[in-house]
Length: 94
Image 1 (spheres, rainbow, N blue to C red):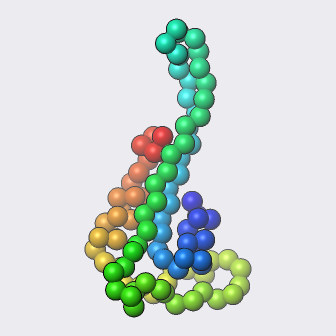
Image 2: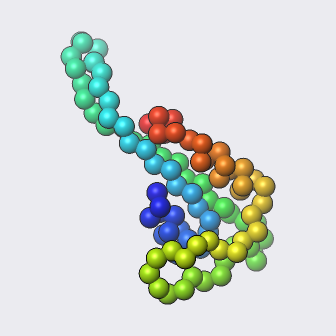
């Protein structure tokens, strides 16, 4: 999740949030035989501004690591989307 966020921040230069989840499951098939498997799910939210001047944010420095966020004026819809995305649990994703 964090690596994807860094990618979008450095390459796409758009605020993006990614949530991923993986869960192991054990159940039985229609004949009652035990089954084992994995489930995965994810969700991505990306800020897509309408105004061209808000499309690109200032460039990041060329060094390694993430030095923090960009100076972008976020609107209420984006703030709400991020807040809701932060409440998603792994069980809901899988």
